[in-house]
Image (cartoon, one colour):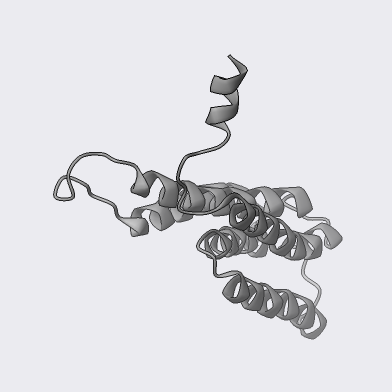
Length: 160
C-alpha cells in the first residue's frame, strides 16, 4: 500500500523537475511578496498574502499546464496543446479577482492600483512558472520602484 502511495509522489517522467518546480514556486512567492509588501504598507485590502497567493497560483497553473501537455492523450494529431490558453485562463481569473477589489465610494473609484498589482502578480507567477524568473524579477523590480517613486511624486490619494 505504501508503495502505491509513494509512487504517486514520484512521477516516472516530468517536464519540470521537482527542484526546478520548487525554485519556480519559491521565486513566485518572493516576487509576489515584493509587490504585496507595498500594498500591505499602504494598508490596502489585497496585501502581502493575496499577492503571494495569486503569484504562486499562476506559477502552479503554468507548471501543471506543462505537465498536462506532456501526458498521452492520443496520437500527435489528436492532441491540442495550447499554452496560450493557460495564460488566458490565469489572466481572466486574476482580472475577475482584481475587478472585485475596485469599487466606488462617494463618487470616487478606489483600489484600481491594487487591482492592477494583483493582475501583475499573476503575470509574475506565469513568468516564474515558465522558468523565466529573471524576466519576472525585472518586472517586479520595475513595478515596485514605480509604485514607490510615483507615490512620492503624486498627491497622496487614498483611492488607489
